[in-house]
Structures are given as C-alpha cells and as structure tokens.
Length: 93
Length: 349
View (cartoon, rainbow over the protein chains, first blue to last red):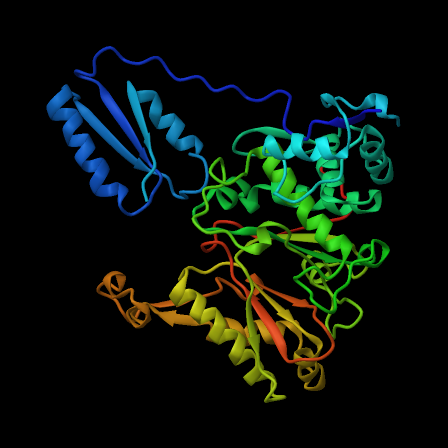
C-alpha cells in the first residue's frame, strides 16, 4: 500500500526574468550604476565608473542609490534608466 | 470541498519512512520529521478555514510569488498543524506578505532575523495555545506547529533556505519556530492586538522580523521604573552590540514583573513613554564595545532605540513564578515594520 503526498513547493506561474541583451560596445554610452546603498559601495562604484570611462570609452556614468537597501528599486530609478544604454545593479556591503 | 480540487503535484511513495527521506533529500524540511501532507489532511485544513484551494493568501511583493491556500495548507500539515490551526497560519502568512513587513529583505539579510508571531484573542484558547510556562519555547503544540508552518512556507514557497534566499550569517533557534500567545486574560492591559487594531474582542496575529530573545531578570524591586530600567539596559546593549538603528522592539513580561505595573496603575502608554525617553545611546558608546573605528566625528550624537513610542510591542506571557522578561530586538532597524492582521480578514473582499 502506498501513501500519496502533495508537493509543498512553489509550482505555478513563476515570473520569468531574462537577462537583457549585452551591448556590443560601450563607447559613447551612458551607463547607470544602481547601488543598494551600503556604505562601501560608494568608493567601489566610483572606481568602477572611472574604469568604464577610461577603459571602455563610456561617455557618462550615473550612480544612483536606492533609499532602502532591502527593498526593490522604486519607479523613479526605472524612469531614470530609460536614459541609460547599460546598467550595473550592484550589491555592496 | 474535496481533495479533487487540489492542484499540487502528487507523489506516490511506499510508506512514511520513504516520505521522510523523499522530503529531506529535496530540502523540503527543516531537518525534523514532517507529517505526510496527504490530500485528505490538506483538504481538512482548507475545509476548516473555509478556503478554496486556489484562494490567494497573498503575493510576495519582490518576486511576485502568488501564495495559495493549498500550498500553505500543505506546509501546515507537514509542520504538524491540525486543521483548526490553519486560520492562524494563514493570518500569519498574510501579515508577512504585507508590504511594510518587507519579507524579502528580512528573510534574505545576513542579519539573521526570524519571523516572530504574537497571537491574541479568543482563537488562542480555541486552538490550545498556552501563554504560561516556557513561553517562547515549546510551550504547547499549537504555537510550536504554527511557528514551524510559517518557516516551512518560507522555505518551500519562497526558497528561504540557508544559502539560497536566506543569506543569514548566523541564524537563531526562532528560525525553527517563533510563536507566542499573549496572556490576554492575565494581563493588566488590553491585548497587543486590541491596542493595535482598536478592537477588544479581536483574534489577530502580529508578525515582526526579530532577533533572538535577550532574557532579563529583576526580582529585587517592585518599582515599575526600576523594572523598566533593566529592560532598557538590554535594549541599549543591543544598540551597542548589534544595531544602533531604531525599530520595533518587543518586551515579553511574565506575571511577576507585570504585577507592579498593575499595582501602580501603569498603562501600556506609560511604559512606552518611559522606555522611549530612556532607550537611547550616544554614538560614542560604540568605543566601549570594540567599535571605535565607526564612532566618527560626532560621538555625542544620540540614537533612540524607538522612532516613536508606538514602536514598542508589550506582550504579557510567561510562567507564574519568576521575575523574568525578554527584550526582542528588531532585524536591523526600521526597514521592516511589525504588522498585525485580524484572523479571518479577507484582503480582497
């Protein structure tokens, strides 16, 4: 005699996320960097922005900081992202 | 309602022993044995709560996960819940999924918090919750199983498992089960839920992202101020040692510590006011606990443990003898807010 049990895990309708297409070239691009807001992201992302400009020819870097590092980015950041050709969403601690 | 309406994938296994190994090997448990979630047992939970299998308990805001009553019931059965526990479990999950609770952050953080559940109202007695001896431990079946059910829901429906979504550096024992029923009848005050919802007859669950309890003892005074000074000292220690930021704190007060407040006519508001004014530290105190490197240029800047008096949750619970209490600190400040939801409330009705 067997016992029938039910699967306790999430099974249905998971929201699928896909990676955005990779840009072939960053020259002349505006790149956004979204920091989670942790203290040490500031020097790291400032250095990253400088590298993007000197090494890859990025024309502008916008660093924005989430007001709450534990919550998703708000609509204002999504709106700002419309002006970016590439985006780095970085977690720092 | 019949088991035919259940949508979850079904698995045929040889016996209960195979169920344990099948579930353990897939990471579906907390390491302890589970009750096999048979269609009949799950159906009984839904039947008791009056919920359809596909009823939407809530949606996890960050990952947009829709949590159905059927899946909650499956995990409740696994945790050892009886059908009559199901309304409490559903209410707890509803509270966790509300936006102010910030469930994803609270469960993913390295900070190591768990979900503390505080149950009030007549339903505590109906389901056999005990507010006395060993409160916050395994005081009774109902609180243990309800608290465990919430953990299994987090693990199985949101992958809040160690090393997956849960990135806690250190956990604490409350991550197995963290549920307490308030001693509404033995308290000199209105219940926590009555205070927060404005209804003296309400059954409700309060969820709070919380660290482990820090136990205190003061059996050498009957002055309310001195008793609260001991609680406040523990809050300040938490500010120095763990997180300086303000947030929801909970006090658990056993009867022996509550009596002086009743004798002197102190209300919850009186307690909160006293604590709010005193539970605060200067940034410079970090230097006393090995954190001099982050004191910075403003050592006299003051940090309150509470942003407002209302952020203190006072819970009457504990065995009849002993001047014990507990301070339960928040997970890293004010990002997650304690949420109180009435049992039986329908968010979409």
